[in-house]
Amino acid sequence: MDGTDQLYLSIPVSNGLVDYEEFYELSRIEYDRLLGSPQEAARFAEQCRRHEQDDRLIQKPGWNRGTPV
Image 1 (cartoon, helix red, strand yellow):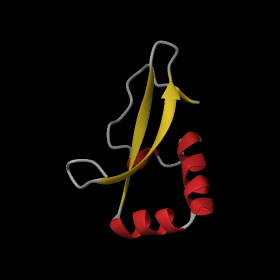
Image 2 (cartoon, rainbow, N blue to C red; image 1 turned 90 degrees about the horizontal axis):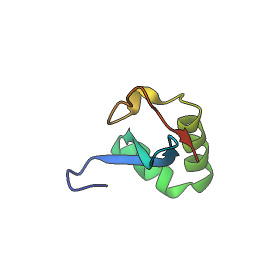
Image 3 (cartoon, rainbow, N blue to C red; image 1 turned 60 degrees about the horizontal axis):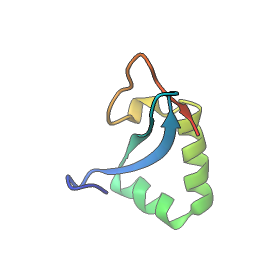
Image 4 (tube, rainbow, N blue to C red; image 1 turned 90 degrees about the vertical axis):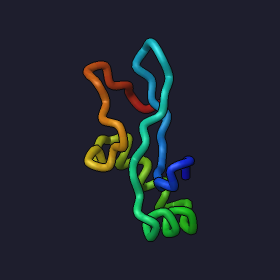
């Protein structure tokens, strides 16, 4: 959670110039479920790494998108 009360999961990425995080929006129900199940959270994070959850990105990446680290 951040200062806006928006719920998310983040993964670290790198584009060769800088390391940063990508933030994927979650509903309250999803957040609670992932918080209670590390296995499910790991599966969701892996989907994010494979770009299968890009529709949830809070900030869309630019042309120089990083790769998961």
